[in-house]
Length: 88
Image 1 (cartoon, rainbow, N blue to C red):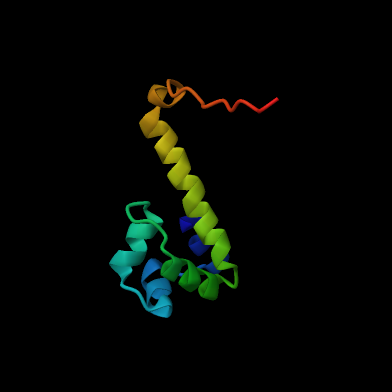
Image 2 (cartoon, helix red, strand yellow; image 1 turned 90 degrees about the vertical axis):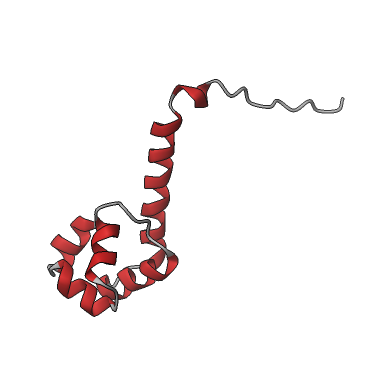
């Protein structure tokens, strides 16, 4: 998301935060990955960039899944899937 703000909107974090009605610290935390994109923030990003809020939420979801896979590592592969038996 940082790249979207820097390259597509071409605003400083301070100016983007002012336009979005959030603190510079709150926006910086999201852009640095220290805070997640909430629905509220996704709507603000969409309004600022002319994009869709779903895009920003989807980006957050992909990031969350990637981080969870890294965190779980080998433990995830040790979970045996449930197989269903169909009635004959």
